[in-house]
Image 1: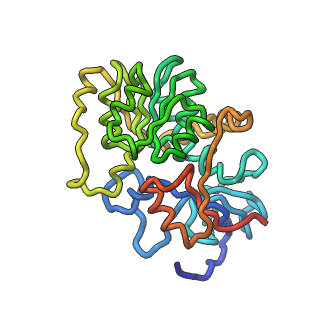
Image 2: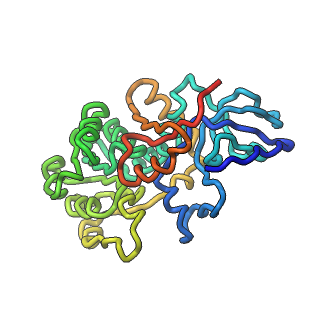
Length: 315
């Protein structure tokens, strides 16, 4: 970490003190120089993340000192937001502040859009990988609300117990102790899979393709099992012929392509959270200095819920 002076505010600028910072798997892709949907981070410059913060000083008539805001800011205690670009006022009465980085933020909307793409129907079977994570726990609960049989995979017995006992999943699979994922799917989803919400790729995707029904939908949200692998190290998925044989649809998506629907998402999700229809778990790491270690742990599945870093407290 390094200490630098806070820049002077110009007309329209806002000084924000960080309270909570989001850590998300997509950030790993921004550390490579490969062409992608998001620009890579710059060397020797702060990384950016979605941050919930509090306005310290404002030269912008739309924002006042003390207001709570969310925006894309630096990994830093304080950020000057030029022209208040991307800042949005929030409150801590609707939901706990970290939820704006999770259930009521980008991960929640990712699950909401992805499950819409999956187009699950009552009585169908939905399988969600990384089911206790930021996106997976919401995706599975949406499937439950739609009247589906929902199965999730996670990386520990505690996580499996969480998704079944607290979130209402019908069954769970510990992928770290289950060597035969296909056998586990046959046991927990005896009627096959109609929708697979993929967050991990790799052998889990292979097992899902093997167990998918005719006309199944594979929603590709992420493939975290491969993010730290080179092209040569990445194992190929060996059964993609199922897509043709079973007349499946496999579709990837990026949530930012759907930002115009944020208000629609937020209204529905806020209602679910308020009523208790949807529950959410956040994994909080204390201190900006611990953010790198928390980020690396998250990529290995060390987080339990949506990973955030608490940097400060509201005043």
